[in-house]
Amino acid sequence: MGWLGNDLDSIAALEGADLASAWTEIFAATMPEVAPSLLRRALAYERQERKFGGLPVVLRKQLESAATNTIVAMPEPPLKLKPGSRLMREWNGTKYSVLVTANGFDFAGRAWSSLTMIAQQITGSHQSGPRFFGLKRAKRS
Image (cartoon, rainbow, N blue to C red; front, side, top):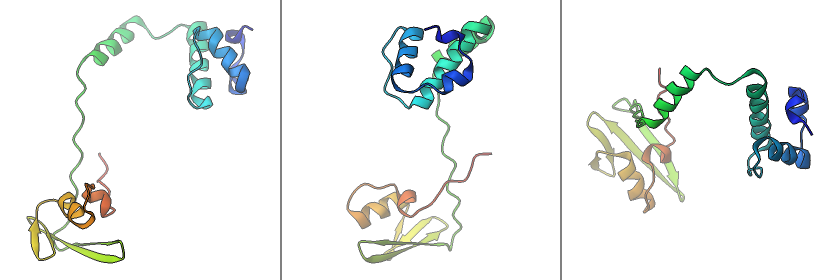
C-alpha cells in the first residue's frame, strides 16, 4: 500500500483495519494494543525518519549510552506543612483532625512522625498518609 509515501494527514486519518495494515507493513509486526493516537504517532515518526533520515549517529550513541546507565529517581520534594496547620479528613462517618507540629504530627493525643502511620491507624490498612489527607507535593523548580 505504500504507507511511507502518504502525507502525515493521511496517517492521522487511519483507523481500524487500515491502521493495522499500515503497522504490519511498516514494522513487520502485529499491531500492539495501545491507543490508536500513539500508533499513528509512531507511524508518522517512522515515515519521517525513513524519508528524511534518523537522528545523527553521535546523538544516537549518546542516547544509547544514557539508556544503559543506571537511572536514579529524583527524590520527591518534601511536603511543606507549617507547624500549627490542621489536617482534616472524614473517614467512614468519623471526622479526624491532625495537628502539624515542629517535630511531626499530633493525633489522638499522641505524637506521630508520619502521616502514613496515622492514615494506617485510622483505616486499618496501609495508606499513603499525604494522599489520604489530600496533600499535594510542591512542584519542582
